[in-house]
Image 1: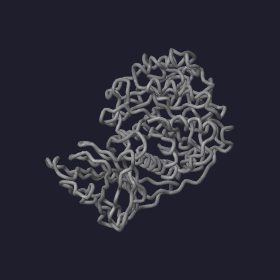
Image 2: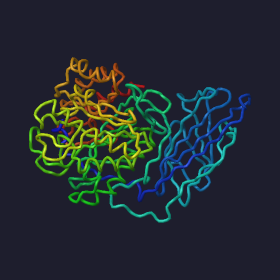
Image 3: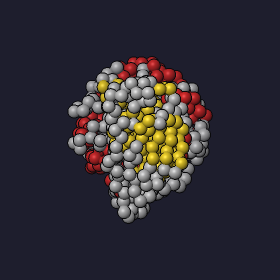
Length: 522
């Protein structure tokens, strides 16, 4: 609800700098086998991809395909050619001696059938140059046909960023499809029927957290993130079995509007968002970018503030800034379908227009809406803006009444040439659609037609008495959810439904209930 998002007694910890100016880098190698299935030791094919690179560091993913006899237990090896080092790896036990890197299997991924694959990922450091390794081995045998080409291009003189954080890459590169959580590259997603699926057609269900801060810190003049957005904080999230992180954003900060401190706006803000998204993706996590706070004077029913600036929740986004925002965001992340766009956090147009019918019309079409004193960006206009860039990312569209009402969603579903729309549902213990009878009568019919993500769930009593049955019901409907919020607010649960008491992931009582549930999920 709006009252939750207007709170600002946040713990404003300094954000550790992750790097300097952006560098775009993407390189791949494919080693193909040649009909040696009968060999005594497995023949293999390797794809090595540098998914992001920044001055002094990079992230990479490796896929190894076993084209010979099944194996039970494996050791994978390669050598760096320019003094690079592995700083963190996942999906295996990593070690390095000089230039030589060795990765051994874990108990859960030791067995690899003929035609099966191993997914690895790591972060590394480099100086001078970062060429791709040329030779790879599996259980001591050189992967057939291994070759190297297209090494990333480093920057000769990176420039400093005024932002508290900086970007690992100037533009995201598409990550290969991977597991829905844990390590390795984040999955590339699209909609199929009423499911979200990966590039291989496997169903993907989000179980994640909302990482608040990016919507308010910049416009309030404190920074960009509220607390760290670094590897350690993501590692903490992953201990909860999180596979998606929703990031609320502020259009005025992204667009660099004049009233926002330039240190936290424009390219500095954009680079910080790109850095966080790339880091999440390289850790196997899907990023959901949410337009949360927008411009526009609104003083009507349920107004969050009287200011025309993007300092609170408005009933609908303003066309003047929201359309350029989504055009820019789409251009920035197109080609990377491990990023979902949540077009507007919590619409409440009907409270401004006076009734549900006109509210849903405003929701879809925008323009001049009764009771709203600015030109509205409707859902159809924002879908059009994204698709005009060529971006095919999955789009989330929150319903009316702060995304708690989906009754008019199907009847007002915008046209999407890519058929990649998802309904977003928010539910708290104090919402109208809090009883299970509402879920079955109002939400289930939408789930039957299109994918639904519960983009925010939570409760204001610092317990799990509401979310526990809600999560169980959503699980039974094969529908995913994200909990509000991964933010160490001063006052803890007394300030609202915060999941943690520190950024190492120590849970509040509410967070403990959420963690206990999602850590049992596959």
